[in-house]
Image (cartoon, rainbow, N blue to C red; front, side, top):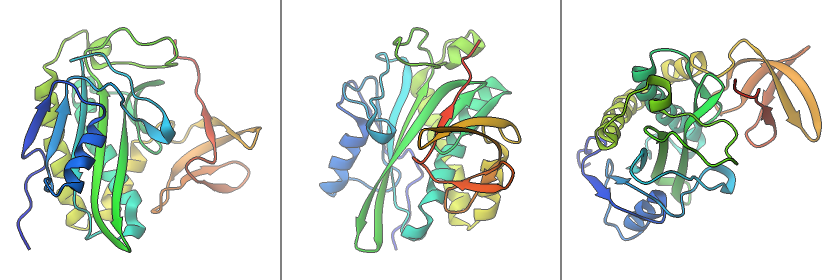
Length: 253
């Protein structure tokens, strides 16, 4: 077995690309990518978010990057553990500079208070039951201060701290955060990762309003399950699957 590169080695910087995930996937399909290879873009003109949504960002002001990972050791039944690993890495970076009030909104967004600071999109390459590669696409708002009106609750690191940052340096630092969390995953510290992810959940132990099948209900967030369900409690415990409910987020003040 060949040794793994640290995540972020090699690190490629692109001026403009359609989508860093698309670009990284093309490299994987052309057999020109190795574990840890990362593509960082100053701008993407067709960025992708979760569930088919577009990811829009101003040129040169945010972290927009995709990293190739080889998670075959996990097995395809443990895909949520990869989600946990990547989300914690993003949390680590953002929380370092905000100090407080950063959280992970289940399953894949980084929040500061009630505002969205970043998100991730993981796309997998499977061959039968073999998990060949994953592409972890990461987007974090860094220096952008003006956002499209159709984004309901965005926030950037600059808006929070009043400081400007070197975006490329932060992208490389994010690679280091991801490498640290990846090593925990390989060391089979699954329970530690899940526990830490749960401890940083947005609205943990708070009452949240959800919408499911046209109905509104309130529930207290209590944690996550190993297979990625959000655990909540109404008059009884419930497990919510991704895509089955919508959060009703309070309007930021």
